[in-house]
Length: 496
Image 1 (cartoon, rainbow, N blue to C red):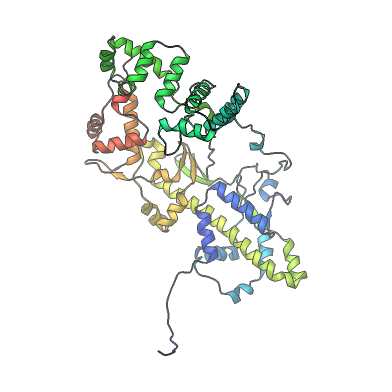
Image 2 (tube, rainbow, N blue to C red):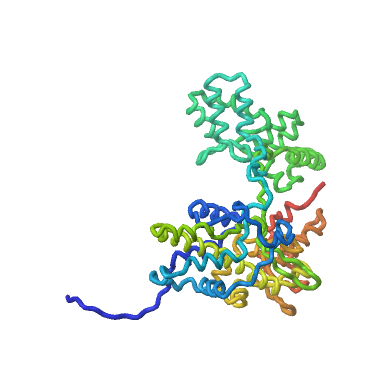
């Protein structure tokens, strides 16, 4: 063993904090980016919201309406150099040169540039609550049932059991315990409430007659039976629910009629009656809040050309506060702290600007490649993979994947996620390859035009598509059909 020195020359990629931040921003959605900038503004006093500071942008002085893109002046030579530096984020700047950066000159040049987009539209009242704060929350299923439980004539142990029942309801209103069979649910809950299982069953039947009817059922069969008994339906309806629910699901009406010794027309009537019952009692109380989508870019058609415009409305419009320029000169002790915050703010603004330009660049490439889709419709959507766009824009496939994740584009044909335009190819003998999404839409159109009394089977759909020079296997049709939420032909058939 010995000690020795050796010189070695090597290259390696260093993931600097700035590079990590740029990658993180690139894959964020609009909402996540807005939340991040809010947090950065709380932590970094150098960042300033131009609207909050009372500044008026040049575009607004010239009469540009709120929400429209204000004209951006030509970048200076220093800005171009800074953007080129951002493009090569993996080249870390030495610490001694970073200290020599002339921040005063940078602040003077930066003050002349157009600010980044702001969170609030100009002229708004900051003291007014947001629209979301004025909305009322719908009544919860458990709260609705708890109110009825409190109003009922129940003993203390019965109320305890009822509270356990309400606490174990799922979104559909069914009573379920994880890892327990339906027959074991009431005995287990009765033991926790210190009740006899038979008494607990009586309490459960009373709860099942709360509004909505058949809530806290343990199975679909029990749910339908409770409703049928509550509405005093015919004995044949009760018998079909008790003994032939599986056959009813398979549309085996003739077999059910033979076993019940009635005409098949009567079973048709029973099936119609049962179809009107509610299979999910808690449906009206479990409506999900709508998720509103704000597009990141707009595609406008002017004549025969398409133009891509970034949606800057509601996006952060940031600038570096000029107040700290005087603070750096007046207090040498604070200079180092302020310089650190200035670097962080500078990189954040650059990264947001670079993210915006990258999204526009990728969207423009998608529009060029999918122009037939925008002109004629989804039947003309072309196969495209990440590599195609990556080669066109000169970026890596992983970058394109990050850019297109959770990003939406507003087009003349609707709002789409950028991922929508990437489809695998299905080969055709005598024509160009077709995108898998176009095949899905072709299947959906075929099912929509079929005769409800004689729906197409998967094999029949395969033959029809083959006549259109689209050759796919039957299992592929079944897979696409399930992805579209289309039932099998036996369940789509209309008997009455």
